[in-house]
Length: 320
Length: 296
Image 1 (cartoon, chains in turn brown, blue):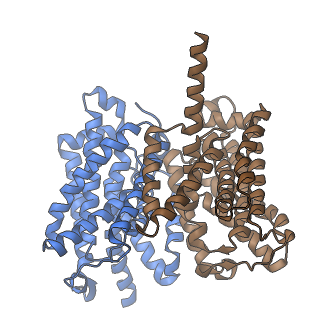
Image 2: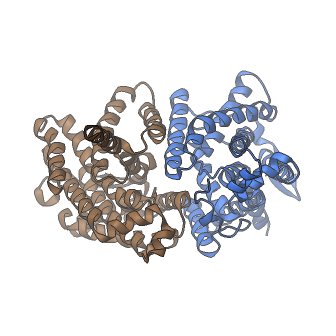
Image 3: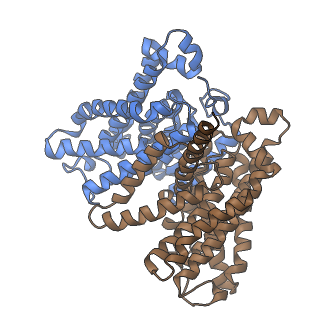
């Protein structure tokens, strides 16, 4: 079973080997891996736990700012900076989830979206910490300990590694007690409570794990783009909702769904941005909107879900 | 003291805007149980439609309401029918769908206008009205009275007419309403159309106030959600008074604290209400938890 996932990850790695000296595609690939990991992290609470968060941009931004600040002010290497970033993101996640987890479904989604917007306003406001609207610029000083590389494929390798770790954590979680509890809470919160599950604790644990991975991903993002400003980090269509969208396309609540979704959506979006961006402002987002509506209507279980159903049907036919 | 009354007045007038935008959203929210993230974009589309009527057809924006609102009603029917009805019992997919509509409308308008900002000519926004010795912007006073009128008319409609009673029955219990012979799907359709028509009214009345931009919907939607949570799910007076309260809080906080923090203030309202009284000021107790459970 585990071998299957390792095989799929190796398959996802294949384009990296094929295109390692093409900077354009390698760049897109690095993004795709990073967003695959971030979507997989969202999927832990959003997919398995069924808690539809639109506020993961907050944890992403906390991770990015923490890594950048520790690196710039204290000279802490981002390799270690990721850990306090993840810890801080977890702490904030638990603090804001405590009151909001009493809300269900769409109410929770609105609340998390409001948190995202509030933190966006705060990030613009706290000049000294975040650089305000101008943002933070991390100077380019190549070196392994700075997590800044001249060769683009090293970034792709880094984000691929991060994605692999996230997927493996998801696989382990899916089979753990907590994973089963999360699924039970998603399916029926009252039944889960009646069965003796501490619903709030399960949700908080799922959110903590999800936020920690998102914070770490934000840290890697910070060293990759090296320009951090609030509109980028808190953008709903490019960050908070993107995680959910990628999971939806790939398959919400499946282990490999987010990876498949990211490897599909990120290149397609980049292609559209290049093809339409100059002539039709916002053109690629028009298509993204259509994809979002279309997928919610016709591809509810995502590519992985549809594939699994098709596979089962073939298997059934063979048996009968 | 005069500053205080000036802030009070501007808060009430801002609140009128929020009330006007929130009533439609709350109606859809309470009845169809859909969190319509695209509601702000409906307002935005109506603003552009009004701009078109005024600039190209020469219709006064306050007369354009009677053209834009019915058009938005039909548009709402189409959206509900094609996109939202098929997702009736899937709250998660509804969020995706309405968010997709938000991105779609916003960027379609961006592509159409090529990022150029429009504002209505004719000097509507410069008309000032004197109220109790205080100066107020005329267009905002109109919005305030329109919001009040619409809230009252809608309450009468819900209390006195058969379709209104059907809507209230569906708010209380979908299944029982169905058993009483109410066509629940048609009620949803009517309500959604009504909600978007109200967005149409809001858009037409707000067009003379704001500079038109494709992103303007985002300014309304978060405030409107704060209003809905504060006022209570599905309650018309809740949305009306909630809007006024949020407007007042924003106005006072903007003056005494910092205008850059208004989103943070909405959020504090939001969380405070959720912790203290999750059903809102005028909502049914427990609606925030039970309300969205599957009922079909």
